[in-house]
Image 1 (spheres, rainbow, N blue to C red):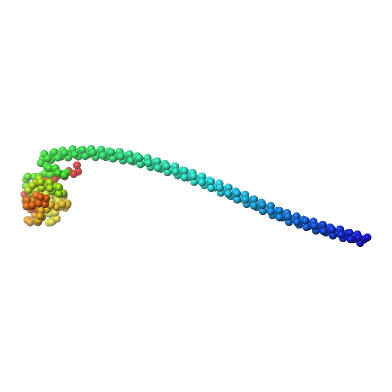
Image 2 (cartoon, helix red, strand yellow; image 1 turned 45 degrees about the vertical axis):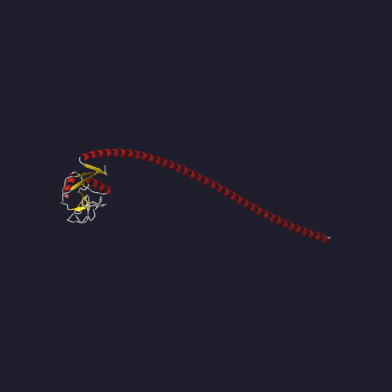
Length: 261
């Protein structure tokens, strides 16, 4: 009987050990399961946090972009307003300047017309005065053709006493005019090479721009340093200049220019 008791005790002990082992196995399994659940929950938490963080970042980025677009739109709007104001001001200035220029042009045109009338009137009065005194008018100049005869220097003195000087011929038209007026009457003109032989100059110091020397002239035949026009010994109707001795007595032509009127 005692053997049975021992057998029962051993059996009971084994059963207890088995129970404890099972309990330990179950507890280990529960621990592993709980650990896995804990890791899973932690991963889900981290995932949620990451997702929330990404969403928050996207919201922040979206908000910043919207503000930037608004600021750009406001800046462009202000720039357009400024440009519009500048254009309006420039147009106003242009219109004002244009009107002022038109007014100035009108005033200048009126003044020009008035001055032209005054010039014409003065020129007419001078023409009448000079013509009554024996002067002739041609191409903005008055000319006095003498009937007396004097040397070149005396003739020039007479012209200067009249407030003029000896004739200066600057165009073919002027030469033709005096050829018709003088015919074959020789007359002193304001041309000389007294200072330097061969260097012919007008009485105002200028050199001839046109020349109407007769054939073979000037030749300084008898120390001839002064010029005449309508030289009798020429066959040309236009080439009538010749050098002549300055002491000879010849008629002369005085010229009074009125171009400035």
